[in-house]
Image (cartoon, rainbow, N blue to C red; front, side, top):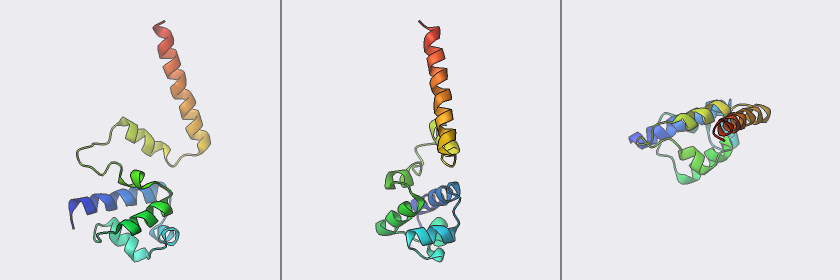
Length: 113
């Protein structure tokens, strides 16, 4: 299979693991066979758009999110690292981090007034 198929499979595996789902659980949520999920993650299957839509729904992400960061020209930047760290955290944790970031920006802005 192509490098794109492998990168997409790796992305699906990453999102599945971030969601703390097994291949079996994702298969159930997506309405796809567990073996098929494994083949997609390993880049052994050239997955259809319909199956990608089911997988995205099972992962509770948009199609845009599913394809994010698979382009080799776009290296993972700091924002992507922050997103990856926060993706599996509770809403309370996310709100706390947002509050801390705003505090840092407010403090920084006050230095230059």
